[in-house]
Image (cartoon, rainbow, N blue to C red; front, side, top):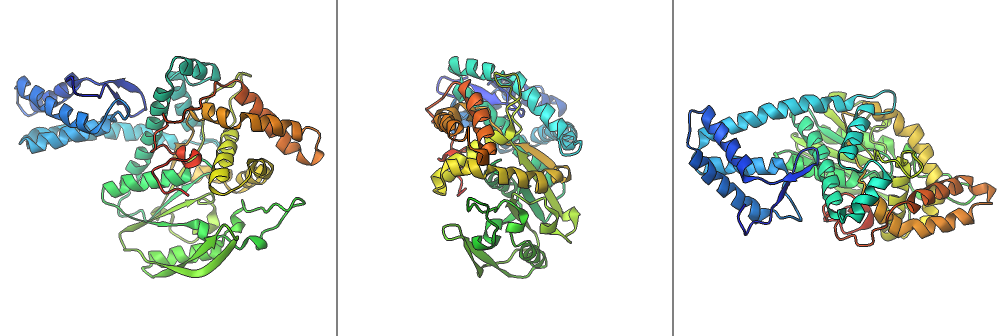
Length: 450
């Protein structure tokens, strides 16, 4: 590698960070040339130097390239340098490798009931390979000064999931008209939808997002409990009939007027924003209840691609038990809603039983209808949440210890406090990339997510 180049590592598709090697590029180009009858090793080395120069101009140690991005540059250089035949052979080789990978990816849809065992196993293997399958190992890597590496490795694995979903959608080009990103609260749906849209737009898909949040009924129409808390977690909090009507009209080529919901006042104004799509456009829907049958009832299933995202963290706590996915999402929602919705974290805790009840009734039963499952958990969120929320959970545990009306809040506060207590806190969040979907919750995201 040249002295001026700051790229020392490359991400593999599984998120593993491996040392960068110009020799690998040289060998890949040379193999393609040999397949076409060429034997000029010097030319292959020269082309590899050009590829490296482009890599170094666009990436760095702080933002390493993924192997797919390196391969894209190789293709571009081969074509621009007048080696179209070699480029074709390289492309054919990539395609054959992609087909093998897709055959493996298709297994990720394997479920039993509501549990995606195959996906969970893949996440567990990844965690073990990266020494992130226990709090003890996470703490050790932090002690070794590897927090930035943990962030990069975790985000690369998540990006690989996004890319895999996009590839499966492209296989159904011409058939897919709706892409749904569904999942429980604070799983990362919004950023996932943005990233998925970027991948699809890059390869030429026309995309139009339908913001389901504008279809909430007025807050006063929702039932309240003894504490005056509204249950807005159910699919019935949304005007499902109007959503269904508008989607059908859009697919038919008609213009519709989207309502506008004001979260500050809890009120909805009808017939506000005109929307119309082209016959080749794909409608993107990001919703808690995107898999709930009534939302897209009567629409041909063949034209709908369903993505499900969940925080499938596979890490054991100091008690030997796996950390609960719902606890990750609880903490995410606390931080996000306090910053962006002026919602007290304590209220998030006491409201969470609504969230869980709605998930168990209206979200989890539909996991097995998804076409692809994405893991939205990143191990590095735990040390950040330890720094941000630990003292809060200690206080809530004491506050609700003897309150018979808040048994659920007490149990959760105690469990999360015990889990966070064993984790090394990280106060400096600068290592978290601004492109990370976790920034949807802690702030600093480059995406419009609020």
